[in-house]
Length: 510
Image (cartoon, rainbow, N blue to C red):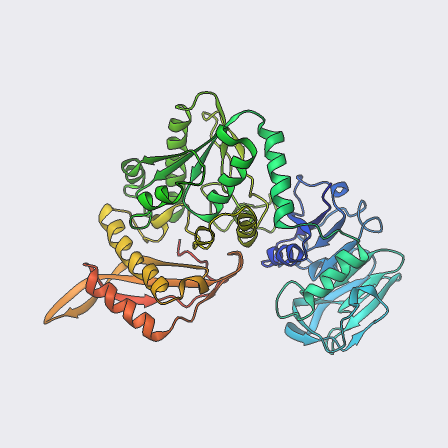
């Protein structure tokens, strides 16, 4: 049975990065809100406590019963987790007299402690906290310090319990991955068996066990996630998989026909359904992004419900939900996490739709999806496609949706994406697209004054979409694309480039 690591989320904005670093060690892990009822400590080989925006000294500090873990399983507290294990077990945490945020260097290390095996004094770490551990409980020992933080790391004597007041998950901590590896591999003894081939074999068997001989309908989008999900399902249940590719009228230019052609020869049973009119009717008059997402989700469900009735005895709906979708949609009741945005493929089905859900990719990140696809021999060009949002261009058109706006943005988007490919820039960008802004600006074309639409171009680099940086595209390229858009797309007279990173911005504008 695969060994697992549990990451308890106390509300940190970078908890997902802990999971990324653990997965990079070929170790499977799961994130759960600290107050969730969906985890059982007995199922995990080791436990990690995340950071938090809260103070352990506050009245509303998140609290958890660790009696099943502390002293019984390997336990690592990070930032808030470290302060929690000190404050609530006999130590003292207080407000820091110095600003403990940003880069710092370890000035003292206990080299005999396995947590710092092969890590040297002077190693750079990243601090981000306003409280600090003033005094450790009696049976705790300090194992690392910085010039400003005495108890930067500690160990509980007689236990495999460790804690650090810095963040090993961020790239600024130069030996962060090594430290996590020391804890999970050398101290906790977790097997490094999480590989693409292992995931495929395990998932195919899980699908067989779960679905049996039942029929499954899957909504294909042409993207990486749904394609990899389809191939996994096809390996597990073969002809019992029925794929439906829906044209919601919000796809990229010529994408409906192109994607259907792309699936030819892959051995998948695919049916194309043009539901443009249905989606446009659902979106009519809606400007709020959440309402647009929900309207599109409803329309998708209506279409699949209709299509599923055409398949005799179909019992399952498959979805290409991936882990970032799940993380961004989770909000713990009374907990610190906040829903960032709704995802059309997260949250279950209405009662009237008598289909059960199967989500083979639900617990993996985007880069892991690609590696799994590669291990199954999926075309590299398809695996290299940029992510495209489920709601399509509806959330790249700020404001209400009309067929005219969709057609305009499709032209702009096609010029931008084709330009990236022609200039050899496409594969160096994780995701790119154009946004139609709800503003008009004055321009001059020829000798005439214009008052037309503005569009924004967006290109980011990322690993899994949880964090992202804008791509520094060459000025000459941006100039060429801007000129081509303004000259070719009627109704657009201004082009801007988005240089926001995630966080604080999101990749999509809505």
